[in-house]
Image (cartoon, rainbow over all chains, first blue to last red; front, side, top):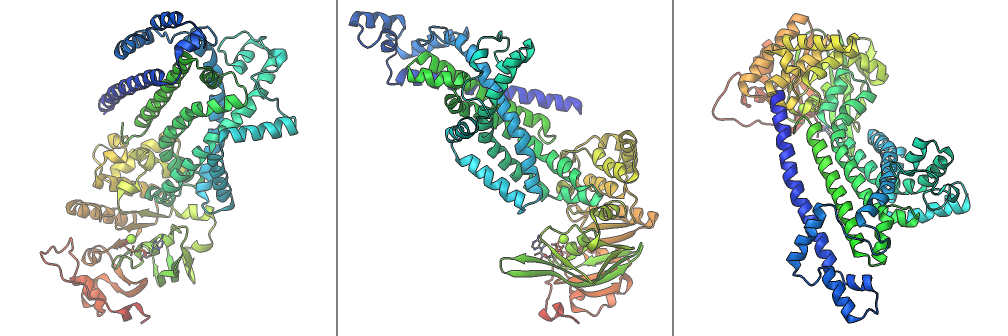
Length: 342
Length: 277
Ligand SMILES: Nc1ncnc2c1ncn2[C@@H]1O[C@H](COP(=O)(O)OP(=O)(O)OP(=O)(O)O)[C@@H](O)[C@H]1O
Ligand SMILES: [Mg+2]
């Protein structure tokens, strides 16, 4: 029987590998095409508005833009294969190096947010489903509806207004207080983690207090979704026959809830949470802008505003890859965790 | 074990007013085999589930008396209910495909009541669960204990259900159409298994079915339900002599495992059977 399960796993792996390569190729192609059809002239971005025509022509051929589109794509692919995403005009660094610098703070922010959202959203959804129609249920439903319909930047500005401007409880934007800037040697480039690792406790607390607000705003974004899905899944599970069986066996209600109903729901929730995590990366673009969080989202918006095409395409590509990766992980986790499909 | 039900009413509040489903059912039973028959929607399942207070959450229950020995089921605390469910009375549902937890192995599901009601350790419960699976005559119980419900046939799934419900050594077993979802040959096997286990353990049995000839074959006494009422309660041996036209209809009409036939007659109904006699 174990042999059968292993064979199943192998099959899952190979179909996943096939689907991921197709999706990845699609992502690369679309990103490349967007880069070519954008009404932004990369030559102007490099040379400036008033460059003489011969300079423009020289740069154009240096960038390979005078070659046919298919050839350009092949060159793009060759560079991609060695991790070369070109050079950013704005920072004058390699885009790959920029991304390595800006991604960790985004990862830190999104991960804190998803942990918050899961810790609050899952129990809230489970309890709401266990008492349908109760006051708690109505509260949960109202809050998650509101959380789903209010845009992130509105929430972010509201938080800043209340917690920073009015109450002064939390620091404003940025990743750490000015006095601690550049104090912590970069290890993982996640400031809270690095400060803890190197024992810079002053910087640690400053960084943590800076993390709270954007993480909360971002968490609210997926909290609504996670709570709503948990409630819906649990509500369905609690109406099923095996729950009646469990009760008939004399299983106490909290175990019926968490072992029998939640045990069936958790598989689907892994998928929901992975997708929510992926969409947090999207949400991070806006949140980082509001809170001047030095992450990939801020990097992306800044490069977009500066017509820095290599940077925009590189960041888009990375976000796309992470999105695909998380989807794959969700799918994979589902097939490994559910005895019916493994 | 003594079960007493007097004037049980179950209804559902709905958009078009209150809909009664069970309307004044009364019966008492000890360690005997009681059959409940009646057409679909006559209130058999609701009546049976009320004994364990497992009716749907929106159901409204009312009764002059609903007692399991000295426990008043309607006012029982969750703890007192826990002392009945699985420990003193078990319930077997129709289709193991839905009634077994899809993400727990058969062994885990049988071990659960053993841990709850007998206080066994995880390891002891696992061993005792395999023993229970052997008692319901599953071949190679140690291997089946590791299987998930989707890896079991319907008959095997129902055996696992029976093992699970007998694990707490209850005094009453309620089988709510426990064989209707199975193939005819498997049906007979499972029924014989239930009857055998119940007789050997000296338990009470409530056997719910559409199939009156079958029920009368396995039970001592039969309740015939129609539109939420018991229209007739007769010893199984005297069923043939029954005067009630509805019972006569049930005896003659449906295809029975006990008496297969090619053409099916139609069941007659009259509104006044639903009224109090
Ligand atoms: N959750 C519910 N909400 C509303 N009405 C219900 C609900 N459950 C049962 N009923 C009603 O109660 C009546 C009796 O249901 P019950 O399940 O006891 O019938 P039954 O005799 O077991 O029928 P079957 O042979 O089909 O299982 C049905 O007519 C149904 O309409
Ligand atoms: Mg029924």
